[in-house]
Amino acid sequence: MFSKPAKLNTVPVAKSAGGQRGSALIVSLVMLLLMTLVGVASMQGTILQERMSGNLRDRELAFEATETALRVGEGWAVANVPTALAESLLVSPDAWDGSDPSGTVADLDDQLSADPAFHVAWQGDVCPPGADFRTPCRDIFAVTARGQGGSDTTTVVLQSRVMP
Image (cartoon, rainbow, N blue to C red; front, side, top):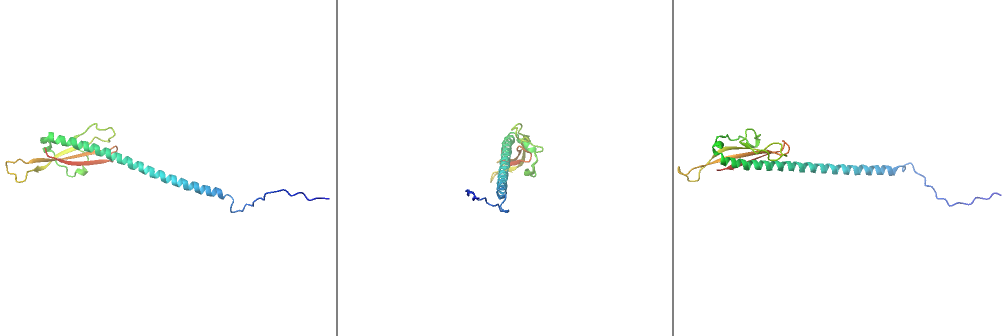
């Protein structure tokens, strides 16, 4: 009477175990977190390199401005010996704040935070070896220049000696 129904080809359905449910989501979130950490670390390295190159540029700008002031100061010392003889020698040239300069180099560069300045003072005289009273001694002047870069925290001080 009743016959058995024909068997259909069915694919067995895998039973989901409770420990494996949502594991792909956890793995993808961990991978996303790792990629984010790598991205943040590389951005910090790039920002550090940008700061270092900006500081180097600022220091080079200050150095070039100071070197220009030093050359102008050396020329000023040769042209103004009587005035330079009256100037007092700086006690600590590296701590000179640029106050009471012998001169400045105005309008050198718009990027500078301040105009570079120079100070010229008599340092001593030099007499040739074996000189007698007929051989004149020569004066030596210390020329100190100070310049700033694009910010007032970047400062370069240079010093040279001139014998006019």
